[in-house]
Image 1 (cartoon, chains in turn purple, blue):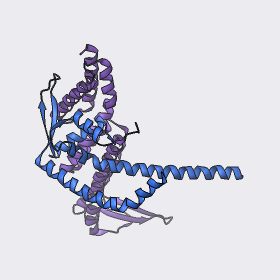
Image 2 (tube, chains in turn red, cyan; image 1 turned 90 degrees about the horizontal axis):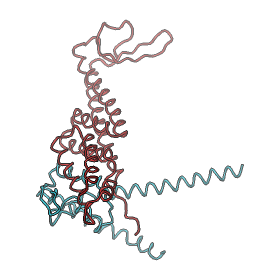
Image 3 (tube, helix red, strand yellow; image 1 turned 120 degrees about the vertical axis):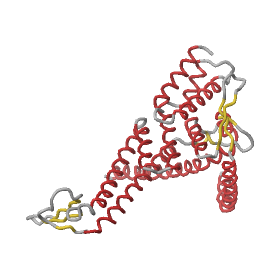
Image 4 (tube, each protein chain N blue to C red; image 1 turned 60 degrees about the vertical axis):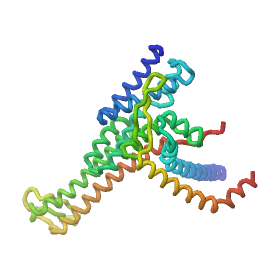
Length: 207
Length: 139
């Protein structure tokens, strides 16, 4: 094999490796070795490995960024089959976001969902600690405008308005909070699946 | 006035058609996606193979064109799920190749999927019989 062919392979794999950072080290090693072997096999189809053959093999694989993005989206789905903990999902999403615009938007949406969910759960958890000040406060100002405020209960009792939910805050907060967390996880996984689906086999065009 | 109406009308009709086409494409893509996992498991049914062999097998025996970017990540996933195992084998070409084979769980899953497929496709064929005959006579 000529040096040029070797250099192109190494350049491609090192770009891919950079994008796979964060994945399990052993997995990354396996991926790189497997692809190296694939490129060599494909480039040598006509006998000798040539620079042109390597170029063809690399072109078929697409950009290292795109390929890394596929691996990371699949990794997210695999890990979700084992554990659906938000931390794991977010961990994978951060990696995905660094690789593709789609991943970035999914990350932003998921953070929003998880944070909202966490606020509701916190709201329910703080009620026993701040029984008189936490809750859903409704007040009407001088113009008759209705104001709703979700209070975590820090500070003093508000001068106006009243707590409309009372202890119902606990089940409602927990339910809505958990619901949001579960929905967000489903949303992230759905996006990953859709993303993978976009790169699917198409029918062979008539020869 | 009439022309602009006609232009808008034809735009709407075009849009409708492209939407129809799009949903047909989408359905086909989903169908293919659903089959890809089974196709890979089936390609490994009788012997272990490495990635490029699997790709070639899928291309020669089915009309699925599959890209490396689809198959290699999917192979890792099937392995992580315990349906495949892999091993590195030295080759005459001078570099090792990563061979995949079905695990007992993978074999079970492939057989179960194939049974469902056979049942499903035979009942669909019966149902679709009149439709496909009709299209043939039109051609």
